[in-house]
Image 1 (tube, rainbow, N blue to C red):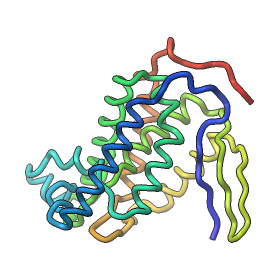
Image 2: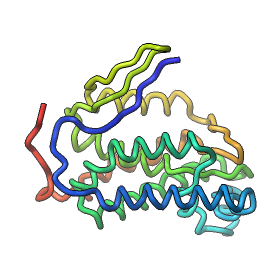
Image 3: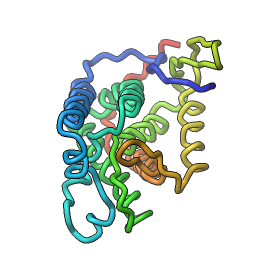
Image 4: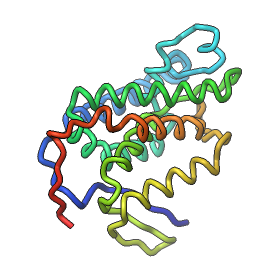
Amino acid sequence: MAGFIPLGDASRPLNRFALVTTLIIVLNVWVFFQELTYGDSFVWAWSAVPIRIIHGRALITIVTSMFMHASWMHIIGNMIYLWAFGREIENAMGPIRFAAFYLIGGIVAMSAQVLGDPFSRIPSLGASGAIAAVMGAFLITFPRDRIRTFVFFFIFFRITLIPAALVIGFWFLMQVLNVGVVAQAKTGGVAYLAHIGGFLFGVITARLFINPQRMTYRRLN
């Protein structure tokens, strides 16, 4: 088994507390515990089911589904990626712009899945699409930054610095190669098309949300 886990940007100081990123993580954790408490009825009520949405029903689930997760590994993995990349983008955009960017990115991502498989009855849930938008914005904003990354290969592991363009580029390539595959979990999954939709939204719109006065140009490495 091999792979990598991004831990955060090692190239520039984070000079403001990432309030919105922290609140998003807290909200995701709270919703996940609601899922554990109320079970399948809660998941079916608030996750996005494409066939319901194209018939104009439960449209709010396009938003609520981006705060839900199918398993412990699902939420832990997503929150690690959000923490690794979200704080710097929030720092560059400002909390209000970042909150708007995150929500719109998640909506675009979930809409991409619905359009890609409009008659699916599989519940779709997860923050991956919105986080993909954050990663797309990071690639455009800080492409040369080095990401502190936990790299592992079977029993061997180390923490090393890898260029953001390589980390995020490899991640995006995996999404493209897996288009049409749904990550199945206990109650559903998120199509890779949603990841691609969110990522492209981030790449295309990041500069519209970035506040130049908040950018940190001093690199540490």
